[in-house]
Image (cartoon, rainbow, N blue to C red; front, side, top):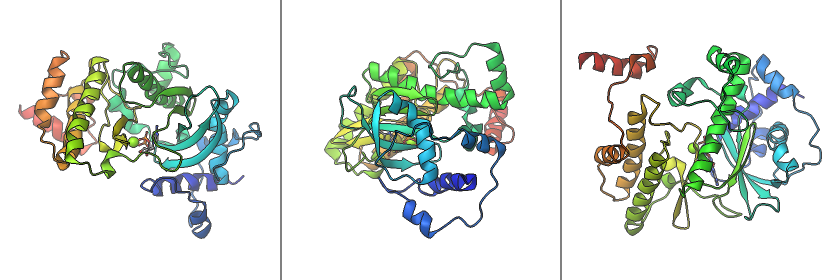
Length: 343
Ligand SMILES: Nc1ncnc2c1ncn2[C@@H]1O[C@H](COP(=O)(O)OP(=O)(O)O)[C@@H](O)[C@H]1O
Ligand SMILES: [Mg+2]
């Protein structure tokens, strides 16, 4: 197999990040073969060498490019073996972090479709920027249980290859366990079904032909905008009541389907009590929501809404960030530090 093509496939997914639903890129790749194939790093080769034909029974309708097919067989093979899914139908969206596929579920699932979110191989993901969110979170293992072994914790701190694998796993496990927690709490999130080492399976929002669009691409009627805004706020309230802040909430991570909303994309979820930046992350979430809804005619004061909600759950507004959480190499962090020095 030519591993360079595999890397090119992921690079192409980057290009496709903003494409519409259900666009397959095989034709485009045939027409525009990569000009400068990159050298494959050792870690990627190791990932690739694990690919084999052991899931030979798992054949799917979706016309995946060869390299994508290996990736799907590796990531979704266990779902297939455990009969969670019987087919992969379409790719909904390719992104930098993960791609989402519409799948046909096995008989145990009472729904016509499920969504599989398949993460990039660890070695092709950038885990450097997750520190702000991971702060104060206990890392989780493949089963979603806390990682408590000192050797494992040390490996993650040292950022050894093994430790990076654990961090990748924990990132995915947080997405899944948050869906479990919030679904149980009655929030508007997809129903979580199963997690494997590189993918999660959840309720699909949309129908056969169309995956639900994000709110960001929708213009709402004013009669609809007001109640939907309240609904988003109710969800934020449920999250806070269960000790969670989304951390990347915006109209891009809220799906809209037949008048209802569904919040998605939770790997960076933040725990308010233990993350020193939690107030600013929370305020940013609320601000982004208000920004969208104010373009839809809803009047909202983000700071007031956020501070009232925050206080109603017993949290304090902490504007100052402990310098140990600031990165001196990042200009935006330096600005915060300079400002605090003057206070
Ligand atoms: N449960 C779902 N049902 C239908 N489409 C989904 C679902 N989850 C995600 N998607 C689609 O996949 C896209 C990417 O998913 P998301 O979880 O936001 O990952 P990313 O980290 O790439 O932003 C979403 O914008 C949406 O179009
Ligand atoms: Mg997203």
